[in-house]
Amino acid sequence: MAKRLNNESSVGDVLKVIIESNKLQPGIDQISVKEAWQSLMGNGVNSYTQNVLLKGSTLYVELTSSVLREELHYGKDKIIRMINDELRRDVVKDVVLR
Image (cartoon, rainbow, N blue to C red; front, side):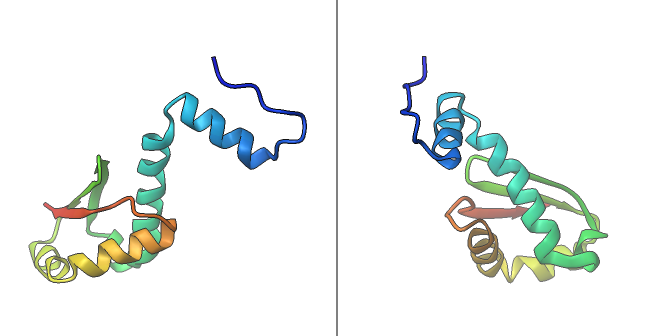
């Protein structure tokens, strides 16, 4: 059972306890990374993106354009940095472009 909080806990503290006790963080990270990819990459890249999946700390991105895949491959470190900056914590450690 979750620990009992006093009556003066903030909503943020209560949500953190709920997320930790129910192990919801990986699912929240999955959704957050997908939204960050869409907002950071823009319409041009998103039109060639088939799927974005976070497994552990590795981001898997399926692209329909081999040219775009090769171009993004050179900017992997920048992509990782941009997504982690958007989420304000280190979620992504590696990017695999398929």
